[in-house]
Amino acid sequence: MKKKEKLDYFDSFVEHIIFSVESAKLLKEFTDNFDKTKSREYGIKIHRLETKADQIQHKILDYLMKDFLPPIEREDIVSLAHKIDNLADYINEVILNLDIVNIQTLRPEFIEFTTLLLQSCESTKEVLSRFKNMKKYDEIHKKIVEVNKLEQKGDDLYQKSMKNLFTNTNDPVEVISWTRLFDCFEKCFDTCENIADFVNRILLKNS
Image 1: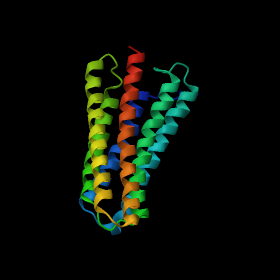
Image 2 (image 1 turned 45 degrees about the vertical axis):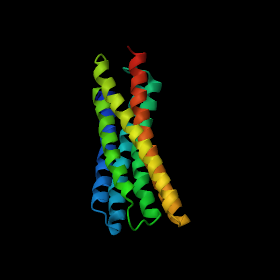
Image 3 (image 1 turned 180 degrees about the horizontal axis):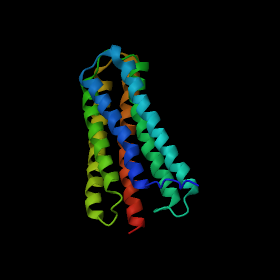
Image 4 (image 1 turned 120 degrees about the vertical axis):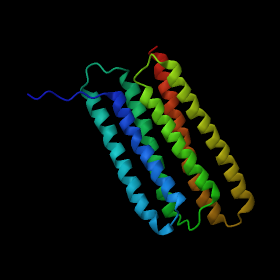
């Protein structure tokens, strides 16, 4: 009988979040060279990455079902995989909603959001890349703090953008459309922070 290939959960977490990093890169590329006619094209590309992220989550959970002794608690593996998968879903939501509400011209804040989102995804990946070496807590914690700071920047940008939107926009449809998009970004930033903070909780539990 062929021996089942062993799964490294920590490497799989990194593999999982890379799809969010790549999605954020595509979203920024689309934004930097904005062409409304290409929103569907980029939406398909990002959706494919989101689907691949789903597959990694399924691979982790399927292996966990049969794993006798995982390196950390089962509940933590399930929760972390779910949080990482949420990030890919929320990035996909951004491009999906951009197409649905039929945005013709980007607000300057949107460009700021995509830049900050890519930074947040990359920093979160750095947290997960170091997660395996649990004894190097100080090194990992610095990256966690970095993600937290980027989330705060995201909050500040969200508040500034919403205030500007409600102060300077008279068209209620435009207000609703942009509120929907800004909310998507806020969920992305919150999820990056949730991933980083959850890793911190696991580290403290296993120290």
